[in-house]
Length: 105
Image (cartoon, rainbow, N blue to C red):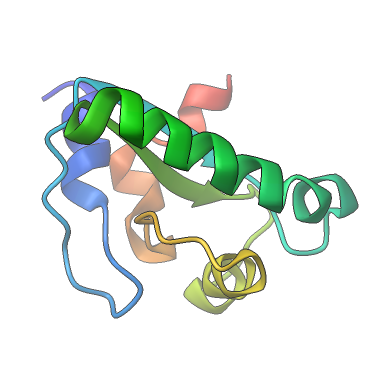
């Protein structure tokens, strides 16, 4: 299975339930709640996400991967809460097997 397949199979909603992602375009969002630039970008990202969803519908999805220094789902969910983001995320326990952090190089 390629990286895309592993990542989409690892996507979960805020309640920890697996999410079926079947999108032609997959955007991976790396960020952290302690990063001032990431927090500042929140509103713009939500606007862009809504615009992309209007343009591409279900053909596009953003999946939140967090930051390489995150140590738990609490870190990831804190960021999603802070920005009121609705897109799925890769749980901390699945980041290694999904290969999502290796995409950073």
